[in-house]
Image (cartoon, rainbow over all chains, first blue to last red; front, side, top):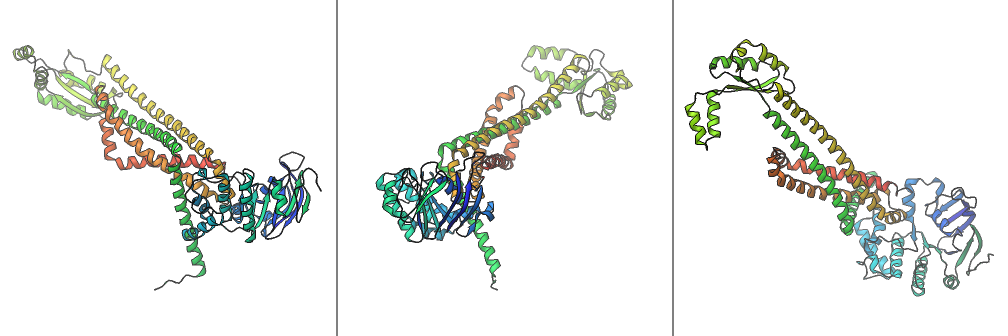
Length: 231
Length: 325
């Protein structure tokens, strides 16, 4: 589903690369947790996947799309196939919960009938039924992240990238979000989660990929969070 | 007959329907943005209104100035005075001669009797003067009022006055023709001032329009800068450039539309309120008001178009830098 082959990314003229010859293979329906300290290269990796950045060298293939042959004008189409959730939610502040979720379908040119039938189901899936008409500022952090997840999955993407989705949340809400991600993964979406939360990593017992200084230092099938030491 | 749709036709129909749907959505979002960002909306609309008002007032002042100039030009005529006893047919001969000149547009003759009548009318409230007038022999000269194509070009007329024999015989020796001497230079001064004012008006219009367009551009740029996170986000969830840009353009058109209505209304009210005062100074606003009233449709349309163009160009330029991949 996600294939990175010896990917290197160097910013500007700095000699130290943000990512150095990373190779990673994520299979369909897999749940992968990406850990690493700030500056380890997690954000760069995710930006490469959403094509906000281009790799300096190496090959990236996501969902059968080779990024080398991807034209700029087709980037929006690629991004519609990947759901992304951010630490700071990135919701449209002027639009209601319903409109935020529907927006993802509107930009894809879905008909109003399709939107009307899909959006309520997804809002129900993330547990926000009854709050469709609220604006983001009227919701709690956990609820806002649910809206963001609903928006990311409403198009039924093959891959969901969650960039520290629990970073701004208290433990209880964090767990709610993680459970929701597990549920989505259960329905067949490949999930790529980055987090700093040791407890979540250790309890989930999923594949853990550790990044350090731009290199993968460990890749365990049922991993736990390793602080400091690589191996 | 039922039209059969092949696969290609069906795909095309679906595409055009999708395009239409997208267009409707962009309009809806634009109008939503407009109504939900109250302060931004007020600020942008206000600046746009001021811009359009400046444009309106500048154009109206120019038009008023031009009208007033026309009126002054019309009023400025040359007078040649004839002896009181000049017979009517001689006057006719002279009139014909003047009319044949290329630089003369119109010749009017005010006979001594008419001049006396006019004078009597002007002083109708003063019985002493009227009595004196009745006693005295009519000494008013006959006056030839001559209008020129260009008040600066008096040479031909002067030559005619100097050389025409019939005119020389009957010209009033006590009263010089009014284009001569000081009066002439006064008339020429007016002409020069009028030309200068016209040019200054045109220059000022261009400068005002440029400055106010820049202000509008900056306001819209700031409005869009405020929402750069939103643009970023739309990009990340896969919105097309045109879909991101569309609502901003629609919004700018709405600003332009509302601002045009307000500015035209305000401008018209201003014209109306200064009409009386300016008339005292000999500046005629009425022709401009009449023009606006007669052509209210095109004027309003022009204002709306101008507002929309300024808005659209500004938002296109302002969103460009945020829309790179």
